Image 1 (cartoon, rainbow, N blue to C red):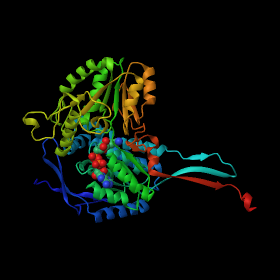
Image 2: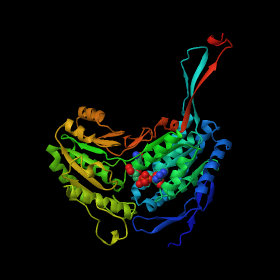
Image 3: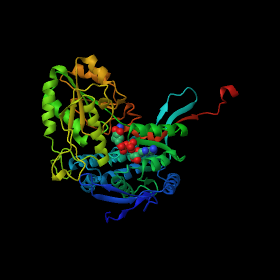
Length: 490
Ligand code: NAD
């Protein structure tokens, strides 16, 4: 057992050891312990939520003028920028992503700046009235809201929820994934330093089925913003239905990436490669189902396979690394069993399908970029989310065939189209069922553009200027302008 000191968690602004069991976070590249903490007990969860509710009602945060709340959120963004490098290094240790990627994720956490602006510029409306009264649509904060996040993009996922929820005037209970608690704790420290009132932010790392469940069920929690797996999301939706509580659910994916016969091949090869193998494929939006025009299929697969085999897999601290380790040994085993399943279904392994060899890979949870073709879209390997560096590839014959296959999935999170023809891009872009469509690019994001999925990929949208209103209740007001009696009463 490591000698590292136990880290305090944040129970409504009080930094102390949780009353639950001990858990550790490991560096996926070596299996070394990088953090130890005690999870909260259920009593800690109760205390955090009660105090969050108290802070919401008494701290004055919700009553601050928008520009005053915005000023605090700008300070949060500024502190994230000032600490960008240590945060990126900590995230590398917590999650094992290559340092180049963790720098991008930390930079994206400055989304607090965007929601500061959204807070300060949010408009409420005076609506056309049908009488001698003024009618208005206004928004109120909800109270205590929860943010439940997965392990694959810590800090970015938490910031994406925390920033709009605080901007809206709420108190927030954050439940980061068991495997990656460290960045959420750092973010809470930054919020505190920036001037977010004590009690308004809690970070409760711990088991989802215990701590996440207790938070979701708590009567004082008025909304859950969840990012994670589809089965967990459905479980949360059931609880929400019983409480009549709004939720947003950002769930899994099996996104189609489509290469048309007229695509710029080099551009498409690089884009497809990045779409699936960046973040070691541990990405909800990974372009994990590839469809290539039959006339181009053989040449494209040959070029793609050669490039995939040459990707730099290795030490996440090395600036040249393109693919780091997977999150845990158990997750790697799950990916290995998916690859075995795909091959047993009749797929043909073009590259990968094994752990890399060499002393530098022995302790980490590495897996080589893997491409399987000769598959059919209805096979399990093409229908289930693997959440790792495994691409399945199929040819298509024409646009109808392409769309029928691409849309034949319970998931509908994202899609990619590679073509030089703007008319095909438009037709396919409109017909493909997905929350986000990238044309001649992939996995690019802008905080000002809404994000979310259809079907089993989720409910609701995050980001965008209106993202703040997800954390508010809408209210209509009718304001009588004279003393004349209401018609019926007269
Ligand atoms: P997960 O569903 O196992 O866990 C996500 C979070 O939910 C964790 O914090 C976990 O502790 C918590 N949780 C688990 N059971 C719970 C319960 N019963 N009640 C409340 N909370 C509970 O997912 P994961 O393995 O951490 O993440 C991988 C999944 O997340 C993949 O399916 C991936 O596609 C998805 N994901 C989606 C998006 C998106 O924006 N659509 C982004 C990233 C990841």
